[in-house]
Length: 346
Image 1 (cartoon, helix red, strand yellow):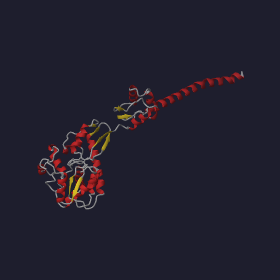
Image 2 (cartoon, helix red, strand yellow; image 1 turned 90 degrees about the vertical axis):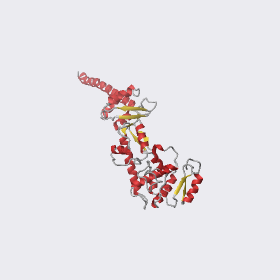
Image 3 (cartoon, rainbow, N blue to C red; image 1 turned 60 degrees about the vertical axis):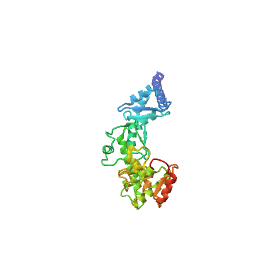
Image 4 (cartoon, rainbow, N blue to C red; image 1 turned 135 degrees about the vertical axis):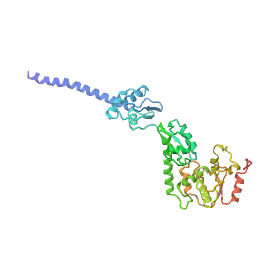
């Protein structure tokens, strides 16, 4: 009897232990399967866009992935989100999924809100109208501006009374889908303010500018006059010396800007008589506003003009380069050499 009394608890303990072991082994297997599935790349052959709508729960995200054939076990992703405590922390937006992304990395992505970024480039030399047209043509920017007129746009973005031309820094900007045209312009304007202030602080002494804004106007002229990086400071030097000697700047891009839509690609002698404050053949000094978006290099050139004696330059037709002259006689010889032809009225 003693043997049976001692053996019976052992048998009961073993009978209880076996189910516990089975349950533990099953749990371990399930855990391993969950980790394997979550760490396995999604079934993607090419980049894919995935949009999470506002208020979309993780369950719906997982089910959508399964419906697209990317992931076979939506409940695994829900379980992982619940265990992490992020089930209700996913961010709405558009996500770009690359081949090789796993369900775990996707979960990290949507919890952090690393939404897809779209790009728009403002090239150096663009006008305000070109920038507005590009904003409105971009498929991922939301149009919220009620007007395209410069004064009204500046009012709507919070800069009433500011001239719009040349205020927006040329660069490539990245943004999520649904960003507004207003936010884009504010960002580009603040970027220009930052760059201009940085360059103004390191300007050369003795420049004929009363403000950084006048330097920005000068930079826009340099931007439109030459596409050759090595010439920017030389062009700046010519313009600065002309200002110091009270000479008219006589730069063609200001007349072209004044002509607007009427410019047909051929600048004629009669155009140089146009009565416009932007016509630097008719009026001395800088035009009232920039004529285009100037990049940092042009701004820096305006604030660090090359020393010298040249007061004239003319395009040579050779890769956008120019010939620089100290006297009008030398300049006229250069014009005869590089520009003289049978063009209308030149």
